[in-house]
Image 1: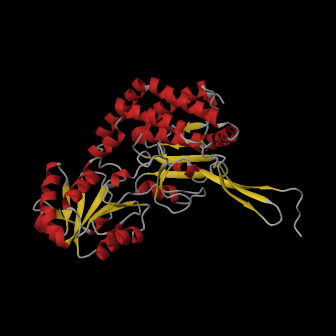
Image 2: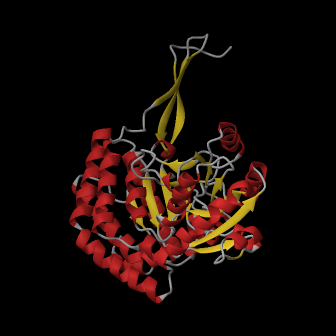
Image 3: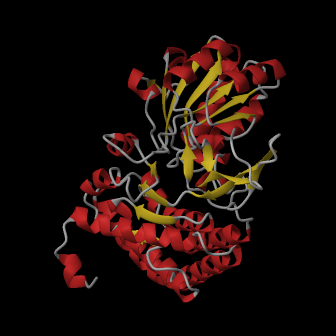
Length: 426
């Protein structure tokens, strides 16, 4: 279709055209061998590596736009690309190419009494759409993971990263095409109209799954009236609970890392819970360390007594994903109260207990219903790369069919293959 024709198409017509093309591309991808898919991925990595100066120039436009619209420093950090970060993205694509192919795995084999052999085999999902905000590296992560799993991808990033996303996608498509990648295997929606989200969620004829990555408003916009199956990468209201039997030195390191290492991401701690028996000895010292790192603390009455710079917390604070240098703090009476707080206010993303008490840690692991639960480790490890997946398509806070960091295996479904030698059902 020539540009003049596209120019006069409505938004819905353009998106449906992308859906048709993605469906064709998904059928083509299903026929390619592991070696061919890896060749495409390595071509994409080469294409992005060569285009780093172009991508950085595009990202500078987005950064200027973000500053002009008042994005917080933490959100600007999510948006920002530099040579080191882009080199990491290139490396992640090559890592995905080196992973085993998730397609074709025989998950189970059953031989029935009548001689039928029934195999459950991993196959591509088909067409996967990813709707995301801020972080332009998602464009490359999502495209490469979908491709390795044999899926065509339709990517819709946020308006704040539009120049970066388009530049990255162009580099990936050009590099992949040089290696034989089919047209429309990777498509980025160039329109920032919010209506595009509504249309995508109703394109069940062409799209098999949508993964939204973003804040509450984005998730709600995707879920409203959706006809396509959704796996949510929802808010990350992550907690660290410092138990009465915690090593307080370890607890301080974990709390600072979970909050400050990169506050604008979904696995950063937003609420700290501290057992009353250690609050007196733990919170004043931690408060000093957080003040030095320019963290604004919002606490309950006991926290405000122990940390003079803390502001009074509100009910809404417990439910807020700050994505910034802001932390809610509560002193709790018991492990039971900590678990109850997490259940009431958490987002089922990542939560941690710091303790030397195995009975307490076992209860926490068993009773906290989150995608990832930790004992004595920072919540910042909830990440596809840190979990050995290379990149990730998102971190699911749902329970079906994927939960936690979504890698290659989670981008496949399965079918049953039945071998017989003439059996008929009586």
